[in-house]
Image 1 (cartoon, one colour):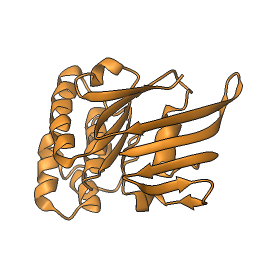
Image 2 (cartoon, helix red, strand yellow; image 1 turned 60 degrees about the vertical axis):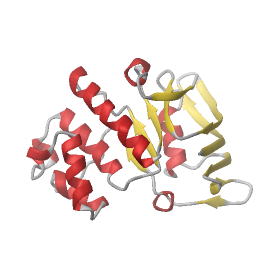
Image 3 (cartoon, rainbow, N blue to C red; image 1 turned 180 degrees about the vertical axis):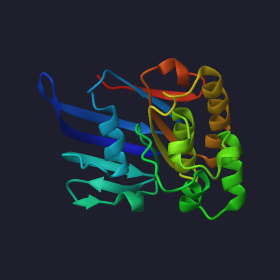
Image 4 (cartoon, helix red, strand yellow; image 1 turned 30 degrees about the vertical axis):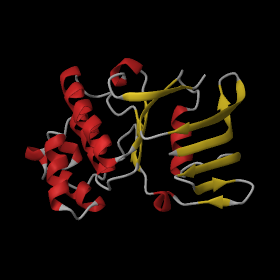
Length: 204
C-alpha cells in the first residue's frame, strides 16, 4: 500500500494553484483522471521521486519515501518503481530486447514480456524502426521488467488501437495480480481502464 499526503504549487493558466492529494492506494489498479494541467503527471513524478513535493509525506508499505518534516527523500532508484512515461523515454541505440535486458537478467521473464506485448518478432529492432504503438508497448514492458510492486503509467494506451489495447489490458490485469502490484494509471479516457481498475482518483 502507498500512502500519499502531499502539497505542491503548480503553475496554471489562471495563475498559481495548489495540488493537494491525500489518499491511500492499495494493491490493484487506480485510475487517475482530471482535466489537462490539473497535476496528474506531476503526482506520478512526485511519487517516483522525480519531483519534490513542497510539503507532506509519501510512504510505501510503511517505508517512508518522502517526509518534508523529517527531511527524508529517497532517490528514484531506491524506490524501485516501474514508470511508463507519456513520451516513452526509450533509448534510441538499444534494441527492444536490450531495453528489457537493461532492467532484468531473467531471460525467461524477458521472453514472456515480449510475447505479452506482441514484440517477439521485433526483439532486434531499435525504437526508430517501431510504430508508435509498438514503442508504447515497449515502454510498458520495460517498466514491468523489474517486476515492480508499484507501477506508474502516464497515458499508457494512447497510441494503441482498440483491439490491441483490449488484449494488452487483459494480460496486464493478470500480471498485476501475479506480481501483487499497485498500479496508478493516468488516463484521459476512464472507460478504457474500467475493466481493470479497482479504485479511482479524480484531480480537479
